[in-house]
Length: 187
Image (spheres, rainbow, N blue to C red):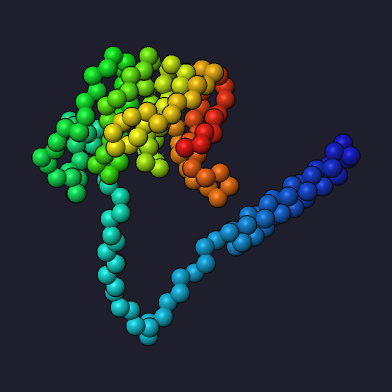
């Protein structure tokens, strides 16, 4: 019995020291992490300034289809009707890419392919570049649509091409193919 009585005060003392240590740790953490006080100077002059008006650099397109009716219509500056028909595509293969306009010129007549174009073409260096599911990459003259060159890949060229000119490569067209390769072609 005597032994249990001597252990009990030691346990209570250890528990009390533990509680005090936790309290000290909480106070120390509060002092370290608290927000610094606000600076107040009643003699300083304060002049309200209007925010500068920023120029709008981008078109606001708030949601899919531009508005709730999904009209996809954006009143744009610099496009002035009446429009004239430059060319018309009447061949059998399917053209399924969004239109691309290059300085009011676009793909012209004069090409017939056995496949279909599924991606957006690239317009650069006076040409229009498009991949086709007949495994070829086509380069058309931008003004009249005549074929400048074609290149056969090992598979369908569904991806949209990218065109760039660097100091090391010169004008180059990059396009992926279903054969698992990325092609870099001289534009």
